[in-house]
Image 1 (cartoon, one colour):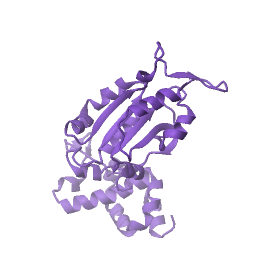
Image 2: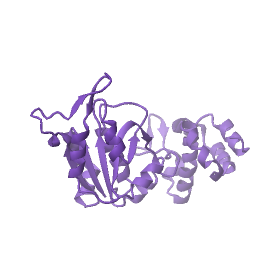
Image 3: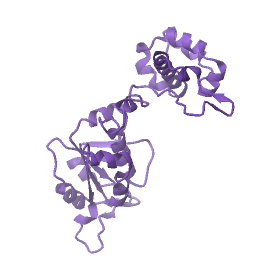
Image 4: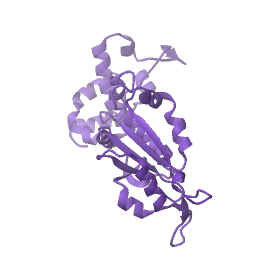
Amino acid sequence: MKISFITLFPDIIQSYISTGLLARAQANTLFEFEVFNIRDAVTKNYKSADDTVYGGSDGMLIQYDPLVQTLNKVQRDPTAEVIYLSPQGQNLNQNLINKLKVKKHLILISGRYAGVDQRFIKEHVDLELSIGDYVLCGGELPSLVLVETISRQVSGVLGSHESAQNDSFTQGLLEAPQFTKPNEVSGMKVPEVLVSGDHKKIELWKNHMSVLVTLKKREDLILPKVNEINWKQIDAFYKNVSQEDKNILQINDLDQKIEKYKNGTP
């Protein structure tokens, strides 16, 4: 996959893609990254690519011409998708990531200040995308969030494909809690099944625990999956979890919620 970043602050992008998994993905030719500085398209001596907003609004706006000229420098795949990172955009989620990860070429526009000229959005942007209902100083961090979450879904980027498949949200639910050595910390022990070596029991524990953790922390994610879940099994499993484990796993007081779904009344 080819990713083209268009930004006023290329150093932010370059620094991040030069380390960790993204650097390795590029070295292994799983991704091709290129970064374009909008200021390079500016002919004015002071290299300013922004100007005041018509109508007297606060802040400065990135101008149409430098954006278009920079976009024209990109060697585009015919199916390339131009994405503008904006708090007004569609919220990023796993379904959208699954659609974007099969694209050959993404062009990511990072706004700054008050954003970009609306005419550029109308003429050149295929998708406005947001990483949440809040405002940052620019689109560089959201663009990197997008690239990292896509990269985790591409075979070969992570050490194990299962790492991505088991991530929270990949299957629509949150991931089961995880533990590492030592077995006991401050009187809290790792759940017995996880050190049993019985892989079938461990897998079942993870699947059921994923439902319980999602029910506790993000019940909204349960609703699309409610008819796929065997609530009688979840109920029996939950009743067999020790109080000590419930405390450590932070899944107390779920009896009524489980009963509600078991009776078919979400």
